[in-house]
Image 1 (cartoon, one colour):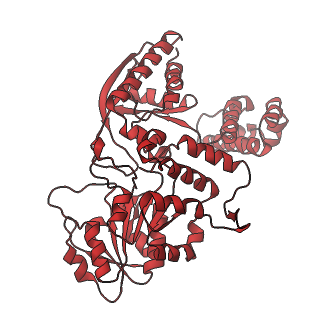
Image 2 (image 1 turned 90 degrees about the horizontal axis):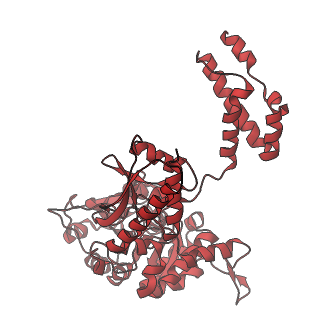
Image 3 (image 1 turned 90 degrees about the vertical axis):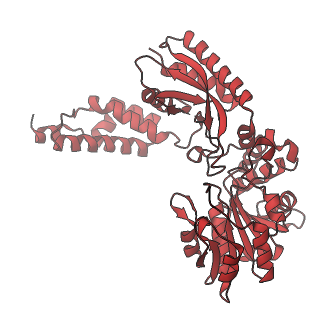
Amino acid sequence: VDIQEKLQNLPSVDEILKSKAGKRWLKLFPRRFVLDAIRDVIDLRREAVVKGKDAETTLESMQVEMERNMRALSAMSLVPVINATGIVIHTNLGRSPLSERAVANVASVARGYSTLEYDLEAGSRGSRNSHVRRLLRTLTGAEDGIAVNNNAAAVMLCLRALAEGREVIVSRGELVEIGGSFRVPEVMRQSGAVLHEVGATNKTHLEDYERAINENTALILKVHQSNFRMEGFTEDVPIAELAALGRKHKLPVMYDVGSGCLIDMRPHGIHTEPTVQEIVGAGPDVVTFSGDKLLGGPQAGIIVGQGDIIKTLSRHQLLRALRIDKLTLAALEATLMDYLDIEGATPKIPTMRMLLESAEDVRTRARRIASRIKGALLSSKARKAEVSVVRDVTFSGGGALPAHEIPTYAVSLEVKGVSANELEGRLRLGGSPAVIARIKDGVLLLDARGVLDGDVPVLSQRVADCLRV
């Protein structure tokens, strides 16, 4: 059969819609999805025929692919997954799971109208930032605070409002890349501020900052090394000394903390992450940090500091483009409420609970997962598998605690005749919810540190399902 004849054999969209399969699809799926799926498959077959490939052109040969496309178009793409990677603040998997209070508050606010910008007492328009201002003051010790949609936006707003057209002094060793090629120099350029680098990559001294101050200086900026660590022959200037320098020269000092932690992690062996309270107490005029990293809340950029500076930021036109919506505010307010009892916050905040959980507790969960997997494999027609619990290390992820190895335990899964890559693909694509695992030294590992307790039975069944004969 020549190419022209094959192309003529391709059914038209109208023919397919009138077929038995087409009529069934129109009852099951939105018409737009049916049309898109049919056209996509016809276009792919036409392209294959033109390229001389051996492609079937009958409706029967295309039905399965068309229906699969329709189901894919009709399904949600943002769906829950089980995180068995061991990376607790996994950027690609949505970073921090929310606390129960935060989830409940989001659901409550989402169902109807809310006091987003309404003052109940006054009976008139209010400010959306009023929902978190008091909490931010209480928890950080700052005079005031506001929230925007992420920390990069927080930095951008501060630079635009406080230093547009003027110089900002930054240590060369702190010109970091936040992620996704989003670098501090680029953020500064977009804000309209002028970068003034000082010091060397590995060492910057207080006098370097002081020598750089001139009549065009608007701000001194310090950036915390939250997503990398320099070791060896290094030195930087403590924020307290920079704050004193700023007061001496009547210049505002800003500290971009990055991850933002309200719980002292030193008792847990983590000495590289100062708390926001400590930083605010050291005297900078403005501090920015993320809501969805170590804080364990929703994506947000939090700005705390001197009252007059926060007032300036609140009145800036750029704030409207960067403001957070009611659902994010609901989650953030509830997360901050969880921290009011600072001693009892760790069990309530999933991210902190998982990061600070003892290795023994993680091993207990890993053993429970392994036991359930073995039981699920026995009760179903599945391939035999070597299931064991192994010790390993992981990291927090999310650009936080970069140098801190976290001891963990994982379930090792080996199946004769099935590669680790194939197992990983089956767990990721072969059912719902998807299980995101990791491979180390050619072996599939299900790391128990990031697996929520409620996911253990589902995870075990998913493993059994993907190994059915």
